[in-house]
Length: 316
Ligand code: 0GY
Image 1 (cartoon, protein in one colour):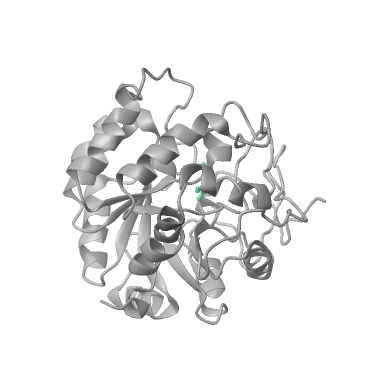
Image 2 (cartoon, rainbow, N blue to C red):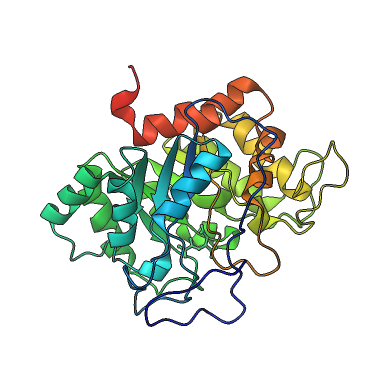
């Protein structure tokens, strides 16, 4: 089923809409599981898309997000500001404040944001800011501006979410390692999973990412978005093998080496996919292939996101 874009907007040509009627996952999520990476889009008529956006999506409302959460068996969401809304955080904040305490958020802010605005976002449930370095999504923001923002949000106990492509890590290394907060990497820094592995060696790019996490205990990673990273695609080869098989060794390695610093999210409504739209139910079935024991699953889906987003509910 196709989904509309309301308001005075026209969907980007070729846009793939989020999947209607996802399967019920076979993998049963642990009680209290958090979908720690998802978005809302508009609806455009209520929350207009930003003039500086690089794409215009179909709408994906907070009610549709909550319905997916309940269908898949998640207890909570972390709603990450999508670039199609620029630094206008109203749709994300509305999704947090309407959720009855079941959603927290990650915002995009500019240097001009006031302390009162940051405080209001905190009250609404925002616990982080996202710095995006993916050139097809955003225009360049000077690093001194980002560092100034990081210093201000650190005082609120927030963290910084960073989104970048694997090839750009060397150039961004000094900036990332100087950030004064917890740093959460989106989608494992987008490894190129088609590059050859040599035994346990993932090759220079992903080994650099592992070193980044190893040397910096404040760095966490979302082991999300196999559908975005995979070359082999969504088809499971047999009942035993996962869909997105080529992503499994990468995500599994991160989960096993850094079990206390990983998060997982659906990435619903999946902006900018080009070749297929995943069934979110089947995406949940990917989890046990990368977090293979109940202990690892509990950390990935409950303990870690709760520590980061609902620390007041975690007993010390
Ligand atoms: C993601 C990935 C993408 C888009 C955004 O905010 C966004 O527009 O994050 C992407 O296009 O790779 O995490 O949703």
